[in-house]
Image (cartoon, helix red, strand yellow):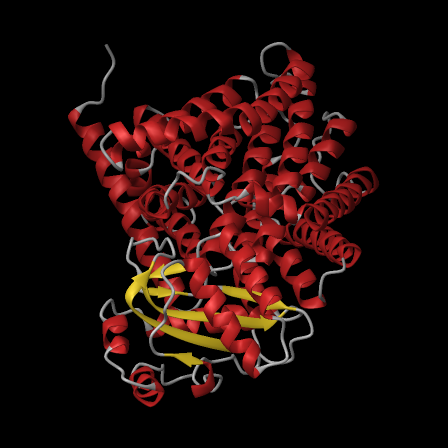
Length: 565
């Protein structure tokens, strides 16, 4: 019976430790400089891969990260497990009711976001095949379909992680991006399945069977699967050890779903992602359960996968600068144009159109997987593969910074200048989140010409989409209001506390109702980030509760207001 020898086991543990440690270190460094953590995680793989370590110390690089043998198989298996679990968590964050409400805008963005770059890729492949690196004996149709798919596909894992890093995932903009990316990737992987069949790497039963089984699986998981999950979770929570029983159930079904889609010829991540969506749609999955799974996967498993991308190729060998620039230009041009047209078609503000384009442009591992398959099948040569990998990394790396730049205000909105003693309640009478929203909405409508029922309805609808408790005794119910010229913040303090389903399970003692202009999504992000930074100390909510009036409350907040604000 085969097993890892002592030396191989030591190498496996050492390589995983280096990969995780370097990825986390560079990820934290990237976040310190206001960049997405994924940028540092990708850079870790480049440093430990053949590009840097392989050039300086090739024996060590081969020893730590061999391309063949048991250790290579183990690392590849762990990397696959990492991305499968990450997509399971990402799926749990998708609320289908939100996706449905964003459906028309997301569908328009998704259609335009894949049709434009796909068409551009087809034209480029037929007009300049040699410049783009088509092998002399490769089928022109297969090459064109491959390049068009590579230009149009988005990397859902990278997009989701970037949105999480930028705290955009649960916003309206985030749901449009994720929904459109889901549409693009499902369409892209359907085309990918056809390419697999055309080059002889089809799943069991042929391409038609693969596509049919994929569609059946998706429909069943989002209907019958959701119903079964919803019915099963209460029994697990009642009779199994919490949260281990629920977490074990989620991971088990996620792996089963991944195994099924892998066996039928579609990548495993889509199986686990749809299982996550089925769980995420159930109100029985508590926010704390999501956070526990998310933190474990995002901080341990996800860095393994994203860092392992840089281990796959040497960016110096076979690097063709003109080809890289050409592929990068085609990729960015197609996605930007598609997203901008889709955003305009949907009637979205200009800044949001550009933000969607920057987000959808991330290619990540999806492009690398396509490139590997085409390289192995002899459709492309190594120079184009390197260009695709560079494009995948560059587009993934610039996605977050460009989104942050386009959504950033010249003077970010801060909480303190907006606060007013007329919009402050020292002792909330509310006992529930709905009552708290109603009480705060009534107060703001006394001071502003707003309809209290409308404000309450908008805020409560948003609360039902995603709980707004952020932890440390703070809740941020919010609404984007049409024709509102300036942001308005209403503050309520509650000695007893109100349940806003916070990730840490604590009741909210400081409740901020954020009303922001519909046309400017950045205001809500600025205020939310500012408040979260003020209350990063777990004891801050208790300090606030000791304030007897608005003046003392304001004094406490000023002691923790960032100096660079």
